[in-house]
Every structure is written in structure tokens, then in C-alpha cells.
Length: 488
Ligand SMILES: Cc1cc2nc3c(=O)[nH]c(=O)nc-3n(C[C@H](O)[C@H](O)[C@H](O)COP(=O)(O)OP(=O)(O)OC[C@H]3O[C@@H](n4cnc5c(N)ncnc54)[C@H](O)[C@@H]3O)c2cc1C
Figure 1 (cartoon, rainbow, N blue to C red):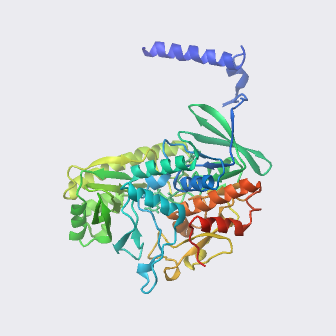
Figure 2 (figure 1 turned 180 degrees about the horizontal axis):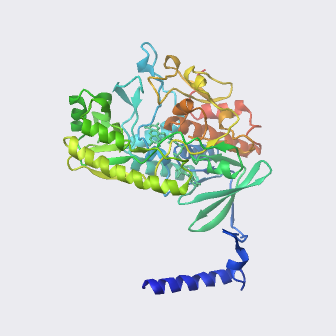
Figure 3 (figure 1 turned 30 degrees about the vertical axis):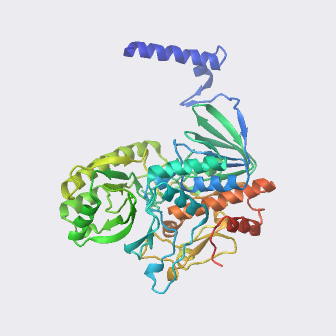
């Protein structure tokens, strides 16, 4: 078909469709108002659930598992073709299941996030998809352990666990709207190649990272644009040992952990180097492309995570600016490979084996919740009378650490979206203070929040009550029963 035929066909199809929609009246005339097109109303097929979780990422997978395991009919809506979200596209080392015991001599080692997040790690371990909780040998004032995951195995394991729990998993499905009865969400609209659908439920959990559901439901939000966006890559055909030797020969190694790699114990699984002492050609270019030297790996001859950052001028909810950033990041990825090939022995034939399907973000929208965790709450290690989990990692360590290698609590009220009766939020969208967010947004915190939000949503659905009517004692009992760790 040549271009003229194609245009003619599109024109004919277009006219046919318009006639069909507007019953003989050209829809263009009926629905075009100025530069806007008024969508005609449409009847949508309906599906009914107890709990709908929006976003099948780091927090959403755990939220959906928790809700379904409470016996409630649960749907999970995920835009991509697999569950996982940023945990399989961003950092790949999960921070952190433990307190920062190694940085505080005399402090006891404690696993402070357990429950469903740990069950996922156990399943990954069986499938050869994790280093396990490998102790940091260098850089333990930042984290005590490195828990790296195989991003592809994670997708499969998470998917299978959701299936086993009986979650109705809608992948390749976008959540596009919410419809309300006053301050209560009645349902959401989804779009997929099967068409648009209306999903009704009693309780909802927003785990979309960008807070799409909260925004569509009319919740208050802001867009701080306070982080760089990123598209990390996996570099294959490399030597992990030679990368270590390269960093070590310049006395640059700042982080090191040894753990399970390609089925063999005591292998390098985490590395980071200070760029200041590396050759100028390497560090200058790394600086220009926003590349960090940090990497993790679960496999021989593979650097699973090389991060390329880019600071966008405006919020990453702006589609056209995101398009420019996507291109810029792809250019940076290309330059990163050249850099490794040129400077790092053993990486002369490196190539990109993994990229994220779209850029990743550390914060999109910030959703207003009933409580906003402050930086003092985090570093002072405060706990609340409605704690739903304990957490001890801070991404700005050693500059900021939770006091005495302890933990702080994430309170239930920090997950309740302000002004909406039946909506909880979990993940990177809560916590306004940038420094507090540098703790709460990390993977293992998001997973724990997901378990709490999913459990609470299910209990509310079973009782037919709003998120604020749920008795804390009941939520706590359910979470403890499901293995969640609490500071007594
Ligand atoms: C580059 C980078 C590196 C990082 N490194 C680390 C690290 O090393 N260790 C660490 O602990 N943390 C790290 N973080 C932070 C951490 O990974 C994230 O904060 C965390 O994973 C966010 O989890 P989430 O559940 O909020 O969002 P996500 O995991 O991103 O999940 C959101 C999900 O919602 C889906 N979604 C969004 N909108 C819709 C919609 N409208 N309809 C349907 N689905 C939708 C998305 O596709 C996605 O799957 C990093 C973050 C980035 C960006």
C-alpha cells in the first residue's frame, strides 16, 4: 500500500467510524468544540471486586497478595506486561530488610522487614534469583546487607505468587479514571486492548508510584520534581572481578558485598567506587552522563545495574518533556557502554543486555495523606500508636542514619489518602520532606507499606467500612499473624 492509498483508507475508515458513532451525523461537527473533542458517552462492561489495587509494582504486588490472602476478591491493574515496577527496573538491590547494625558497634542484628516481602525473597532464592541478604564488607555505614535480585526471575515469581493467591491480574491495562460518590470511590475505569471497563470495589489501594488513582479521585497532590529521572542498564559480557580490580587499583572501592552469584557463594555481588579518584576521562564522562559506579549482580559476567540519571526541567508528568528525557537517557546509556569498553579491563566487548521499557522515577506526584512522616520521625527513630511496620534504612547514610541503628515506624495514618474515604496509598508517593522520602521511598519500605495497605483494604472491604473506621488493633493482629515485624 503506498502513501496515497494509506491516506485514502484512513480517511474512509475515519468517516465510517464517525458516521457509526453519531448515527449519520458527522461526529467531527457534533463533538469538536474549538480545539477540543468532546467524547461521546459510552456504556462500559462492569466487573465487581472487594479490593482494587492500582499499579502492580514494588508496593502493589505485595498489596494485592495481602488483600487476596485475607480472602477478599482482589484485582490488580498494571500498565506493563509484568508485575514488579521499579524494583525490577531501578536499583536491583533492595534496601533494606535489616537495621544498620554494622555501623553501630554493639547493636544487635535484626531483620526488621519480614512477612510477604521476605516470602518473595524466599521464592526468589529457590529459583536462583537473588544473592540472599549478603553482608556488606565495605560501606556498611550505608547499609548492612545487599539483597540483589534477578530482575527477570522477580517478574515471573511475583506473577506466579499473584496467580496462586487468586488475584485477578490485569496486565497491559491502564487505569485512566475514577468515579465517585461524594468522597468515596465507587469504581475505576481501565483501558486495554479488550476495551474500556468499569471495575467496582469497596476498597482501593493506589500503588501507581505517580499517584494516578488518587489524582483521578480528586485527592490533593503536588509535583515536587526534586529528583533526577533514570534509565538503568544491565551490562553483559563483562568481568565483575576485573571491574573490582579497576576500582581497587585506584583505591576507589567504597562498597563491597560478597554473596551468592551464579549458584556459588562468596562472590562479589555489590560494588561501588568513588569517581573522584578514578582516571579523569572516566570520571568526567561519568559525571556528564549522570552515571554512578554502583552495581549489583546475581550472575557471572554481568553488571546488572548501571544507573544513568538525568534531571528534567519540569515534572515527569509532562509527556513531551518525558519524550525528550527518554531519548537523552538512551544516548547516555550508549555513552556508558563506550566508557566501560574504553576504561575497564574485561569490559572491552560489553553490551547492553537490559534496559527499562520507560524511564524510572523516584517521585512523580506527592499525594497528601492523613499524616506526613517527617525527617525527625525517621532519624530519631520514632514509633507511633498505629505503626504498620518498622524500617531502618536511609539512602543518605552515613550523613543521615536512623538513631542508634534502630528503626522508625510507618503509621497507618500515613497511608490514608486525605479526603477520600476508601483509598490507601503505598510506595514512593507518600512523604513530602525530601530527606524523609530518601528513606520511606526505598523498595523494602514500599513492600512493607504494600502489605499494610493491602491488608487494611481487605479488612475494610470485609467490614464494609471506610479506611478511617478500621480498628487499629484488628489491623495489627492481622499483620502480626502474617509475619510483620513490630518494635514492641
Ligand atoms: C533509578 C532508581 C534506582 C533506585 N535504586 C534503588 C535501590 O537500589 N534500592 C532501593 O531500595 N530503592 C531504589 N530506588 C527506589 C525504589 O526502587 C522505588 O522508590 C520503589 O521501587 C517505588 O515503588 P512503588 O511501588 O512506589 O512504585 P513502582 O514500583 O514504580 O510501581 C508502580 C507501578 O504502577 C504501574 N502504574 C503506574 N501508573 C499506572 C496506571 N495509571 N495504570 C496501571 N498501572 C500503572 C507502573 O507500571 C508500575 O509497575 C530506586 C529508584 C530509581 C528510580
